[in-house]
Image (tube, rainbow, N blue to C red; front, side, top):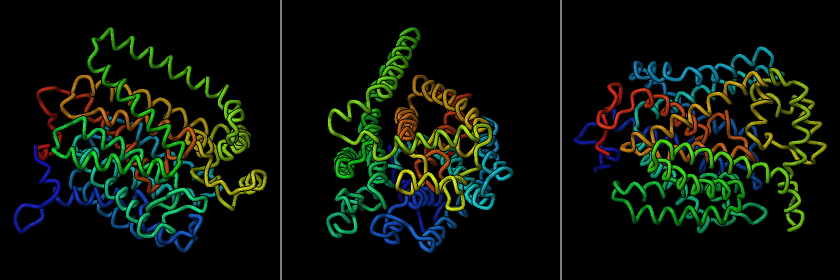
Amino acid sequence: MRVDSLRTASGPTISWRVIECWGAGISLFFQAGALLPLILADADGALSESARSILRLPCIPVYVFTAVILIRNFPQFLTALRRNLMVPLILALPFLSTLWSIGPSTTLRRAIGLLFCVLLSYVLAIRFTPRQLLFLLFVTLGACIVLSLIISVVLPALATMPDGAMRGAFIHKNVLGWYAALMILVATAVLIDGTFGLRRTAFVLLAAGIICLASSGSMTAIIATSVAFCLMGFYSLLQRSSSIGRIVIVLFFLQLSVGILVSLHEFLVPALEALGKDATLTGRVPLWELVDREISDSWMLGYGYQAFWTTANPEAMHMWAKIGWAAPHAHNGYRDILLSFGVVGMIPFALMLPHAIRQGAMLHCHDAQYGWLWLNVLTIMILVMNLTESIFFVQNDAIFILFTTAIIMFSLYAPVVSISHAPAWQPSRVAL
């Protein structure tokens, strides 16, 4: 197995495949928000309007790269669109919501940014196999995590939050925690795969990810990482079981998941109070109570894509005054979908998720040669993250791009899955 063709061009010329690989890796690095936002941010991680304007500039070459690759592979792009019509339908919602948005100009501008992010997801889905994407993330996330450790050693004041937690190359400790969690997943997947010949590097990056995760203190990322390892065991059992055994395992897992969620809802706050911990989940509980009231006031259509959390919205200002801090979002991805699109947006999103999860599990069980395990775990891991953070439908965000890529890739491969033959539309592979 060779990975050299993902690294260098052969001969004096640069092939389009090399441009795709380097372009995708650099695009993900920019969309991860490492280094540049940290340099432009204030000490508390806040970004001024001028800083935000500067940060939009690196997005332009990413958008150009995305457009060029899709134009060159337009038939494959159309195939991906046809295989999952729910994704373009949901993508149309931010633009449609300008019709009822309380901030139409803000909604339209951010909808355009989201459009190009989802188009980049299509690029990743149609031009890379799951194993190639795993290697691409291994390199890209590895660079972010190693850079975080270097900055923490060389410039500790810059890499540390005011509360003493490590933020590394990112503007907030939670963001470092998210990418450290993904690094742990990716490094573990490389070790399990065993075909890359990068075991030593994987062990080093796994250790680096654990250090960054622990130093960030992000509970969301720690919980998501724990869930990821449980899911690895679940999917491994699923693959080795018979058809009847799989039904039993899935039913047991679903019952266990529901039981855990109910227990958390009923006993988490009393348990935190008994332990002397913050029972408000760092202000999230009172925020959610106020958000739920706003959702009930506009439950059908919402307030327009990302229009609620702006200074132009008096309801948001009133909410910030009540909780005593300017929440940038609901700290819950599902609530933010309802705020943006109401039930009209939540229904297709809720219908798409179980179908994608089922397709991913089917591919993992019947087409193991492509290495679907990590992509299945990644999808549910991001669903868990959104219980206390808002990652869904965030423009210029690498995590949401990867989430959408997984859904598109599942639907792209599932109808033509074959153990012995690759699908006819598939791009030329790179001997991975």
